[in-house]
Image (tube, rainbow, N blue to C red; front, side):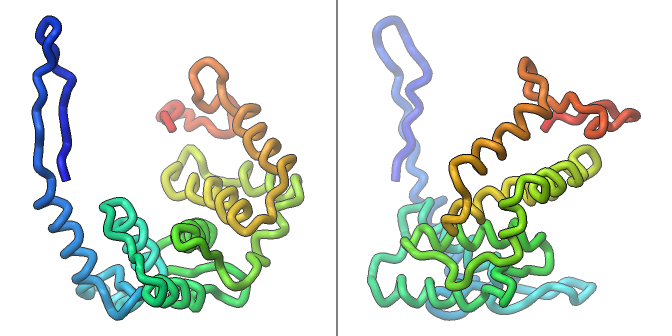
Length: 212
């Protein structure tokens, strides 16, 4: 695999720099393989921490991460039997409430992450995302978005706001109107010139408004 940098110009000529990133890709592939438990099953962690609170062994986030990384480096599973095994592993990790649960991430975000990984295999979660269906009602959706701690913890909180969109769309539950309402919420709560939050309830007065 090669990467070309043609940003440097000299008159009418272009100075082309070519970089071989094959060793990087191979290292990435080896790292993913080191997390492999069995076909389609991957661990997020390889060692336990001092607190002993890491979820060792096969993990929803580890499996979804592996699928996304392999897809990105052009090493995605191709054989039908192997792909079917990946799908089974991910689908079996879905809870009775339709969500995917992982200790270090909110279920809405983890569900979106796993559903997106299944989408790469032209598959979807086996169960309906029952716990998310109430957010199809606008008042419930608005309550979720308004209640997120956008100023104090924008990184993890935004995962919930983005995750509900992905999860509901990938399960086919979101309508065109719901999607329009989703993006309208952002439009109504940001400054159209800067893209920053302009509603007082989202601003951290002491630190001023973070840039999201």
